[in-house]
Image (cartoon, rainbow, N blue to C red; front, side, top):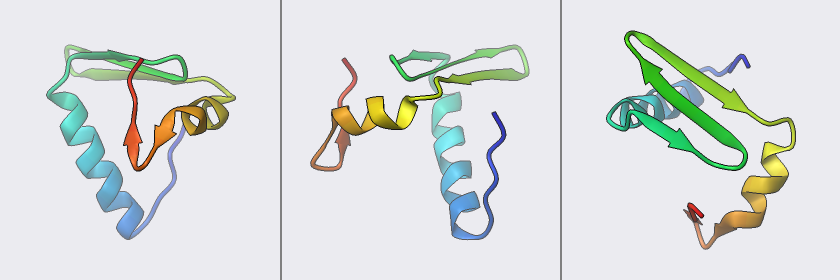
Length: 64
C-alpha cells in the first residue's frame, strides 16, 4: 500500500504515524500494523473503507 499526500494531508499522516509508533501493535478487521525493530508493517484490506464506515460513529472510531 502506498500513501500519496501533500500539504495538509501529509501533516495529518505524519501525526497519525507518530501516534501509532507509541503503540507497538494494532489489529482491526480492516487495518493492522506492527512495529518490528525499525520497520512498520502496515496492512489494509481492499474493502477497508466499507468496514471502517460501518464503525465510524459521531467522529469516533470504535475498536471492536
